[in-house]
Image (cartoon, rainbow, N blue to C red):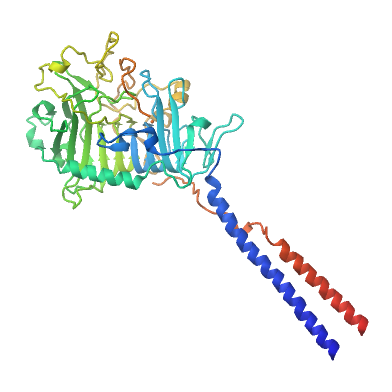
Length: 530
């Protein structure tokens, strides 16, 4: 009887040891699962990639600019989808980059660094960005949710496993230690306040009835006076840009630091709001024969003093949160912080919106300049301004060097077509495509892709113009810029957890083996005694 009790107690003890081993195994597996999840989350934080720092490191003072930091980026948006060539840099929260982008290098050679920030790459073309050369470098900062790998053995760097063929290792940066290069929520709050403030400015409202000839609609800036901030603020009734005839802004200054022109466009609840007017810009500076600026690629930004502020007077906060359809060629920077902008034709300037969709045509970087206290709008059209008398407008770029140190070169021929789409321009040779990132002709020659990624043709195929022209600007001009859904790559997903290694199970297994051995010994002892 005693022997049976002893055997029973031995079995209970051995069973307890076996169960303990199994429990330890399970606990270790659970702990290891947590560790593996942390490793997946931290996978994107490559120590070899440089810390991107803060946007203020690259652009020290933007307090005088109506767009703030957004003025330094061609597209500034919480989300951007690129289906047609985008000639400019980006600062975006999420990027669906189905085609290339980047500020092309022109013969002007004025931009020394092209800076972009992409917080989350959903997808991106391998030909994105523009290769550096002797007078241009890049700085591209990616958010910490992206997997960034530097190139090795002459291979291209990788972002979420996509080769980025136009960037060098030392041009790639990343957010580190929860630092964000740019806080979009904070910046968009500032932009909303600026938009509302500009919309509240007491100024004249222009309607279509103010134009004697609907086919020749001209806003002559000599009819307006600059305010104490050297700004001319004009309000537009929604019907003005709804019209399909051209609208010319005449009297703009090509001088660096020219008078800022703010045009508030009241949508009055229209959603979507259709911008159907071709925008033409006339730089006369008192000249009898004003020069019209074409849509163009450029590195010269000193002559952009025009900001279009889209708002909604029927909304309590005056913010327009609908859709803006850009149905014609456009020039001047666009501020619509709560809106979605769909671009179907060429657009030159900053594009600031919650969502930006480049559907067709091309977009061209043309940075809005800071406010200046020198009034540069002519008093009367055709009358020379004292401050500008004797100066010559240079085409293209329409630049005036305020302190020339050498004879000004002769202007190149004007583009006879003015502001038109550039879809029918000559094809770039292979070398230019490699250096400059290509154009929409790399896709199908007809304009690009729609919002779903399907090929579409441009809506204005009969228009054409020569895009690239030389800007005759003396060196040292003072320009120092320091640079829906498609297939997505979910960089935050934790895959393969069911196959996590049981790294902590060894001790539990050993205890189990020991328990089995002891059980065997107990059986042997029992048989010997019996």
